[in-house]
Length: 205
Length: 256
Image (tube, rainbow over all chains, first blue to last red):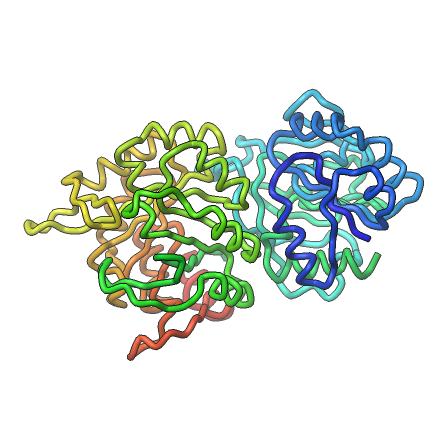
């Protein structure tokens, strides 16, 4: 069973609908038992890092998530701020992330961008793979994804970077460390590319 | 190569999908959910849905229908029509709308733009400007789905909207709407040179070359209605979208 962790942030229907499209009947849930019973987890997140970190703390689900991710090592995919939460901390706030992947979340630096490049980075951007991954199996040519963000994950270990994208400069668009994966973009809004990625997450792990 | 956003705009009237000519003669073209499903298949990178009957009927957005559309839209979705309050904007965002589009309410209540852009960020606030020439050939802003001439100059208005917090402008030419006569490129140039925020051109597109022309005149992105729902010459309903190859050759590579 794939559970989408509902800790009170954002609209999760699009993620569930796209999973349904690839043949996975996911559960949106905030209950301990649904998280403990899951063999795959999706950790969503939109908005501010601290807001998401606080809500995740208040949900009382942290110890269960740690158990699933670190002890049982089930496949877990963070999306957007859910991906940022996998890191240790963020330049956006003071709260700690889950710290499952070493490194911080950094803000786009306007100094390294041309004036007409706006923050947040919003729109479709091509990505390049940094290492082979089952998430990218049979991916369509010239993969591109839809991004809306001002911050991005910056793993200490470059082996943890799964994809790079460029906006003013190169940044990590996705991370993968053992069973823990995160994508800064929105697969649920990235039609065939996002669908292939989620299908791979469902079928290949 | 720079990707240019090419955005189908779907008009909704009484829950059905319609298309107009010069904001009149609305023809029923099908079911909006079905259209969105087809656009998913066609790798459309962004979609805009405008409920053109909401303001006229003095009613708020039909959240239930928008939710249905959003849950089927596997691409970013913009919605406009009947929005008058920040609460409605919050509800729309929670329903899965990425960009909120304001037209009549932006004109009469620019404070709403400021409030909304503070709440969801200016990148998600689009002001839609419908423009028509008066008998002296001067461009004027129209509201209420084109039915009301405000007498306001669109250049001044566009600047004011940017100032208020709009992150993007959807610039529509009423005369060109549904005509397949090409975009009003002078209007595009006039407005895009007056503001720093992206201008999305709509009204009149008949080919991918028209998209390129709009971008050359200053548009950051292009949108169209009839071009994506009709097949000429007889305006038979056929939902289509140019292939990536065509977009690349005739648009992306032409403007960079």
